[in-house]
Image (tube, rainbow, N blue to C red; front, side, top):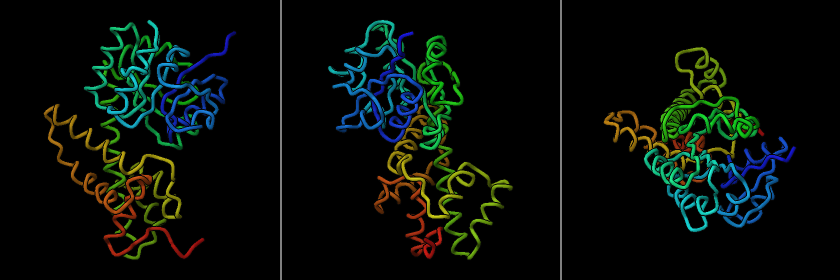
Length: 300
């Protein structure tokens, strides 16, 4: 049986980890990233541009920062649609504007190419383990046909509906992630200033009504000084919340709770944490609270 081949554009924190999982599963990956050596570093065969990726692989995955980057990669002169043949499948794993995504679906369909928007959740740790959750929009049959691509990288795959539905679900999820991370960071700084044992506080929160992803999965590491580097940056978190506010505004839903995370991650950006993992928002809040750190700086 011939070796299965996948294309991958965007080999950063998430894309690089997913590519490594695919390669380890015995799938040949044709990769493109503008950073020299990025493809080789994760075991991919390098391509000169996205068009070459699409010429060499019938299924191409994208993991890019936002629609402003996705659009030229898909529709540019050296983009995926320039190289893809009829019947190919493009899977956009980025966090992107659902409106832009729907337009790309239509352009791909006009070229005979199937397009799926497939938001991912679980962060860098899940990408490394192959336990991501995928929420996809577009043709259900096309999604089912590429189950072999998702098998090494995802534990759950959900078909959410029409084009754009996957990226819509992703924005809703990321907003809740931003709220819980920013709010928990504030609580942990307050707990430190109040003189509480933060490990014990987390045990209380995780068996009480305040439990959330940040209390369960982030702060048990952060209070030991491990910020889980390599995941979503603070700047990208701010971008995701802004995309959420744009989405709900167009839906006619009031965004009454976006001010908190926008202020928190905006503060982190202004204090120089924008390019670091979004978990560093706790340090930004700690800075303005008098230089507080939630981990014990006397250890290690």
